[in-house]
Image (cartoon, rainbow, N blue to C red; front, side):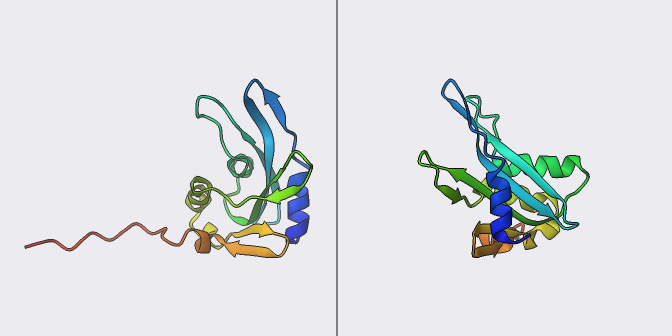
Length: 136
């Protein structure tokens, strides 16, 4: 599956729903695992801060299926006029992808039809820091 197919697969999962001042399902994510399985998720916005991004939803589905290695991932959103946008993962999601499996630093993050970056390029300072030298 190429980038444009992954983007369209995610777009098919968009299903916005309004509940009061909250919006659910207006961002959708699709990911492909290292064995070629596709998982999907949508965002959930809550007033209590317990919601989650679409990427986290897709990763949850992947982990539920017993998989941990992501080959590629994308997230999409439509504006009110119907235009489709590819969204980069937020910092929390970038770190979440990395922590699921160390090999996920090589995950291809689809940022557009012809734009892909490895997670390690989007999260360059991912290693635990070294301690500072002791002062005498």
